[in-house]
Length: 62
Image 1 (cartoon, rainbow, N blue to C red):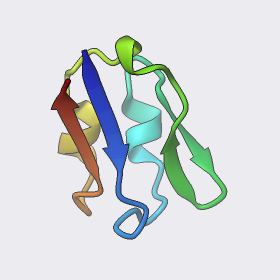
Image 2 (image 1 turned 90 degrees about the vertical axis):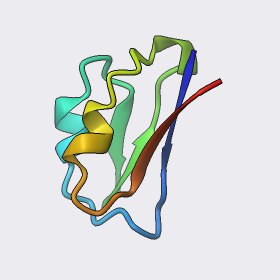
Image 3 (image 1 turned 60 degrees about the vertical axis):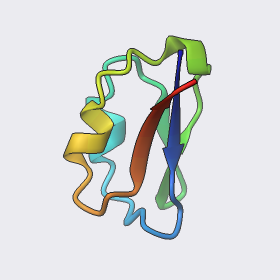
């Protein structure tokens, strides 16, 4: 199982992680991305990590 976290201080609200998450775990909440799905739905692909230019997204195995 994987855990996705978004550092709200680093998130610039571009929405790239939301648009590119194949598991659809992320959504925009106002002007910031947030995790809305269940952790066990994360594929661990780290697409969100690699696409974030601000290094606001991390994925860790739990």
